[in-house]
Image (cartoon, rainbow, N blue to C red):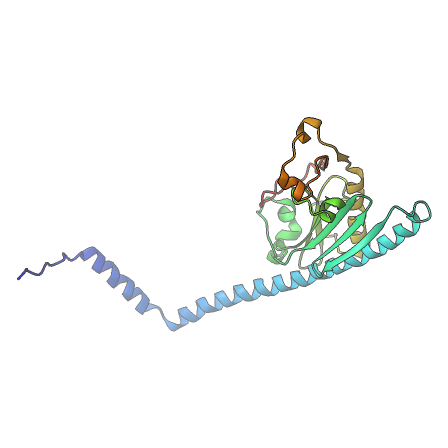
Length: 261
């Protein structure tokens, strides 16, 4: 019969466990309630603020959609008598996306469902207006991308698109716009940048100007001498070009998610 082995007792471990249990036992109901109240208040304030910001962003997106439809009608009325073959079209997709198709370009406007914040040294975060209220540190965001219209039409999955601008909306329905140099971007201070029909129309017009002025460049011949069967099957045209790319404002820099804004 084997002798039962005794495991040496670690007095330090036993002492630590006893102190932890004693600490837990010493927590008063008042302290528990106080911590729960702190958690509740933090969740209540942030959640309430984020819900309000999302509603403001959704309202701004609806306004953006409205001015885009009106702009398309206005431009169509001017273009059709001059050249009926030049089409400009507003394309609704869903409640969080719409397109404007014109000439060979496609502008895609996307509403993101998440509310975001940024590091303290980013964009408007350093202004007195934002620092005066912690809720102003959070933003809804709307993105505007430029694609070649045929890239979507023919489902050319490898064709690039370009971020033209990002519109940030805060709890006061003030906005901050960042993106390419062609956009009419306000100062970093958001205090006077209220979301209005005129402001949203200016955003759309500027995005269209940026897209129109950024021409399609054909690739050099050596780059398109070979084509794979996969490219042919997927309708990846050998001679397809790409945009030169946009020049970004000197105020913009790589964003926290790695994209250039």
